[in-house]
Image (cartoon, one colour):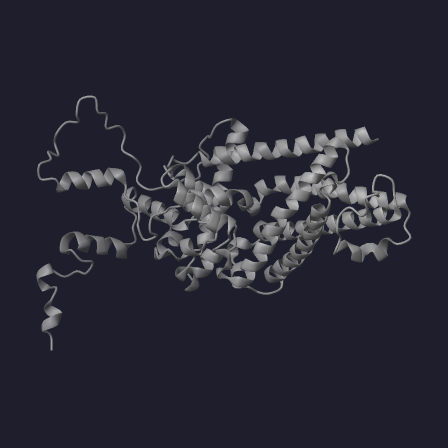
Length: 446
């Protein structure tokens, strides 16, 4: 029976990891639908930022309650994964608690695992209460109806179950060791320290060793299969940020937030206009191919860059960006969180077409209008509050600006007020409809 269990375990492990690898390849493929962008500069500064923001959770604690709870769950899952490594080794080789050879250090490990599991369980319950009982405004937005809300709750339920299975497994194991059961008890004494699961022993007192083994094995199998299921659920969930937060922060902008990028083609035109020695009618140099002019701005995901598409997959849907957005706070339709969710939904829609047909075939849709409304784009004040608020370095503003560029430069579809202001700047050097000679007349008024 033991060899059968090992074979079944290896099959489950290979299938789970294989399916996860397939999904990650799809994410990478979908991200590469965007334009290439060079973020290879300043690797030292980028690694430092990744360590501080993604690993150190420095921006999470700006909201202390949610930040501290998140750190508890985050640290708990990272450290408890050492226990998952032990389960994998035991499952493949048919051993039991292989790391117990570490002696006293193993006791410290199991002790810390159980304390962290308990803290994770409490933290997840508090997260559930904040999301479903306390009416926190950022969890009540229109974009969180239906699947996004359910997805968040499913993950919380799943984390609760995983922690319960872990503690139950340890409790049954501890009782079997106390009973001196074969393959569990050791002449060296109790393997591990069980500060939490020991309180479940009264529930197991009087049960036969056979029953306890069934409980322990069932919890063991459900725990590892649950982790493999959770791993593959990430692709379909906002919790993909667990993995993508690190590359996302590493590739985020290092320039000051108020510094916007220039379109290279427009920059060259301006430089040509400002150069008194340039001949605007000169033919291109021999061998130089001007090519087809670049599209200005973005109307669909193919016009965005790869970091922007990575941003959309990394979005945690926490709503910190939207809660800081002044346009949203004054009742406008704009929600930076929705911008990211809409972008991801469009990327996924295109990805499904590629999965089905082997390539993308125009479906008559695009990000602009079919997902993101023009009213949302023009409500943005470009204040960068959303960028500053994001705990994982996402930049919704860059997508908004690229789409507004498209509206202005490709469709000439700027709002009338903005069109008038730009005309006045072109004619008068200022957004107001006054001649430059009359600009200081107000100073002469009494």
